[in-house]
Image (tube, rainbow over all chains, first blue to last red; front, side, top):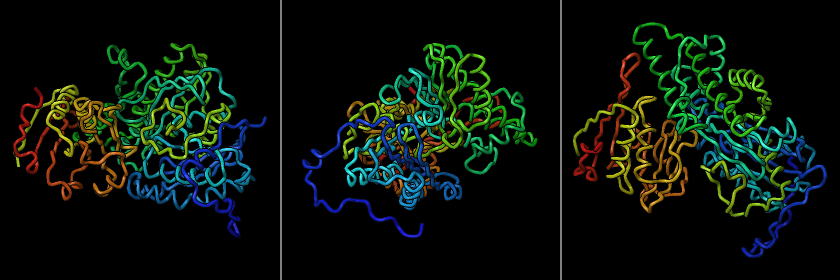
Length: 381
Length: 161
């Protein structure tokens, strides 16, 4: 861009009094027929994502990532991530506005991921969102990052059915949800008791000596291996464990089993068959995820599943889900990979849904919630 | 400084039971440093501590969000569960701006060895050892060592009872 855009913040209104600013807070919106024009801000981990949607139309989606910085450290470093968000925020916002052809003053609402995620990272996004909402006189909607991973699919595949099952799998989450209304009614059926699916992949990547983040490397390696070479355990899938944890996951024991198999080869002085280990491990993870999701469909009489989150990029999960869901007559809605990883579009999509449902905006004093429960769609003070 | 206590943990339930036993002796301001290879049972032990302290929320791996605060449900200390694998020092735990102070909480740091020693004169070190590779059994061993005046008089041998 040749020159910085003219400031669009209204001229100083002086120091607002607490009562005055509360009284001036915008109420629920009545969007036009094309739906509300919503800015979505996502900074829960290491991507700075900003997007603009009108209703279910994605007008722009821009992402800056600090992953290259983290790769040097072998993991996400909170301080590096929050500094990167600060630096990336302005240019990312400008790019999103330019690509969408939308001016800040045209917006109807500002949505921001208020949790769960890294404290320092979330703080940057929510501070920026509050400043924009206050300066523009718009409603602020602090929304749940994990539900955003589900909501984004409506931008790709259109309106959601009345009721569906959502599987959200990423480096930080593995959750099975029953969604009756993406804006108002989400029930958590189960989640991981220990490691998230993506986290287990990253740790197995470390065990196999692959670079960080290990997930994609393990996935690529697995495609060359024999998935039946090693019988890895399917946790919480039988008897008493299954009865107690019908829709919960556990990947910690599987990770330990992989560690011991790898050590067994090393101790025997045999080269580790890394591709077979990766393939057998991937199969165990995908099998449990797909089996439990289908069981939830059966129990709740639901015929649509949405899969979201960064780990839904995993090739074996996509393959196995497509195969088994088709056989069971369940419709699988799986967004393209670029919408599965963290981005602004998912937050704008959920913001749009929440605004369209007539929700009252969040108060301007909401804080981030790094452990935000999945049943909470909109942040409360 | 107390000596080292070794405890045998035949299964994951025993690891959780040790956590509950530890919760009986842990007080606000205490620091527990957990070490052990991937899969040794660090998160499982912390789950037991959380159950014993009666804190809110499911104790699972904190790797993604680095640190998680579990508020007490019974007016006791909160549990701060930290994965220090990617942290440069424990100073950064304070910098994480958690909604609780470490003086009012029991802080459990996984992968904290080598990071926290300069900061904490009193700490309980717990090393979990799991069998390697092809060894047949599933059991773990816990090695406990209290460091500093806080732990000088604390009896650690009966924690599994």
